[in-house]
Length: 207
Ligand code: 5GP
Image 1 (cartoon, rainbow, N blue to C red):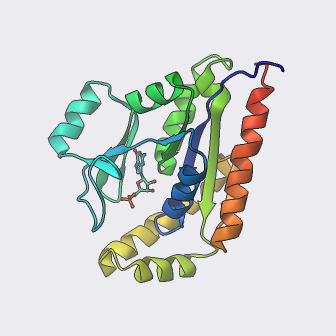
Image 2 (cartoon, rainbow, N blue to C red):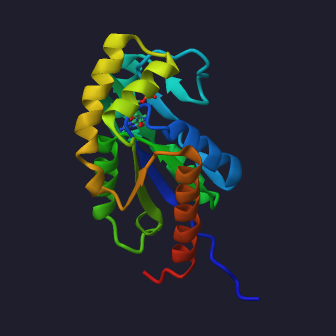
């Protein structure tokens, strides 16, 4: 038997809200048990059903700023008027334990991660394991319907999110993979195929 190296993926998934990203990420985590979800910090209030420490760490503006100053975030951004940030320690711990790390972040965060990776040598495990996937709704109208059906946000909030979505949708070309989420099952099959293929690429990575 050849001894296979343990190599982790750093999976970045971005999608406008209502794009079906949360469901897809939950299914990934349910299937790939070596994958951990990077729980972000946010200054927005929890929605119904969200749990502190599982969905997000819900923190104050002051606490967020303190963490920015303490360099605790690998990236942070303001989305829909609230601040969001990825904790450095989540990624470090995930990689140290040989697990894949799944990050659900917006286009600005993905851009910052790519920029930080560009300053590392290509053989760095973070560079080697980096995979970015953009999940797009089939259309803005479909997204509007999904956001209303979800019933979690007020109409004005939904309109703001749709406007933001139009801006984000312009940026799918920055990602290696694009999934148009028309049917959830087909999208999940595509996402899991990406993870499986990327693991095989990593096994054979010489860089
Ligand atoms: P929501 O408030 O609907 O959970 O998330 C709003 C947006 O913030 C989504 O596009 C989500 O991907 C993004 N987001 C969540 N956590 C982070 C983070 O840590 N960093 C960045 N840049 N975006 C995040």
